[in-house]
Image (cartoon, rainbow, N blue to C red):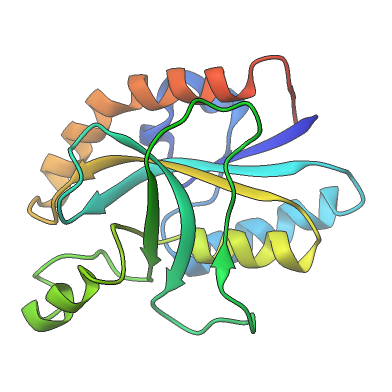
Length: 185
């Protein structure tokens, strides 16, 4: 099985960055990255595997979750729910629903009432997954996503970067375990 491994930024996957396709932060960067990638690889058979960090309301910092559903915080180009499945043979980790928007999910960006409402809809948050999922569906590629929880929507960018520097080793080991024996694209 071939795997195309994606993450937003180098800091998330520093120990294995040479094996990962970086999308950049946010929906626009991910879209541009996916257009280039899919033009080169659209006729190949592979599974898209997205790894990275996510903020969360209550999930423990440092825990890894398997994204089972993505809710978009922007326009969706799909007429169906974004449902995912775990990678065959992967270690079992808790499942989670991800809210993917084009803004850093924090009290500095969203009103407290909106964040409280998200608690009932989503377990964790990122800024790229909905775009990656959309491209996977449009090109008929399986899509899998695992996230490591980096914060509880309570840190600034400097603290997030520090935490990511600590968590990237754990996430990278997990990604290597997921892709062991598979060909990386």
